[in-house]
Length: 296
Image (cartoon, rainbow, N blue to C red; front, side, top):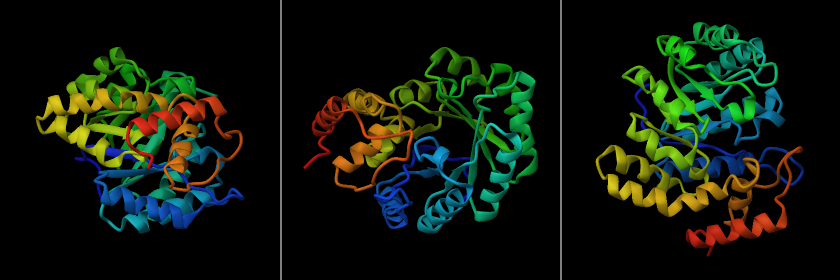
């Protein structure tokens, strides 16, 4: 399923593990079913929230295949295929295309970074080589490098680049790239707490961590805004802001995976270097889940 005209809530899906650290494919399929039934508009797998950085390429392929099969054409599936090696990102992107992904999420080259021209070529190399719509991923807090406004302007003109996941948290930056938004280039919030402001400058929705625990509410918030029920959307954004922020009280995806376990979803442990939450933070998270009505 093509993602070029997509609007709404894209869940940045967690990857469930068994106690021994292996991927829990049964639980993964169960989560996909829950999201489809709850109105999630698309599924992003193998992103930051999916712990892909601690998974092998073979595991990545198996997870993507399982998500595509479980989605069964009902919602688009986007594959996170980013790497700080352009050659590796290209290899992973071609494989995701072969497996049937509906789009790709491409991250900046973390750690080795690159200058502005190198970052441009990093994205263009993949976009030139695949026949899938690609979403740029700007998250300088994790990668140590950002996509310059000039590079967004250049890359937005590429026929295979259909948007950007803007996760810098900077509304100033979002405003500077908003003029690029149009029928062929979408702006996606990468931070749940500023989804509403990004929608107000032409955003198409959110690639969401919060949607892992409240998929229906996340979808409704975005669609309420886009369909003109803006006071209702604003009320929901304010109501659920404490939980949205609470899901980042420790490094993502530790809190959201912990939240799902507290909710009885049994998504299992983490892979090192991620580990269980500090007890005091877990208690705070539990209180936020109770406040949101998510604990029985």
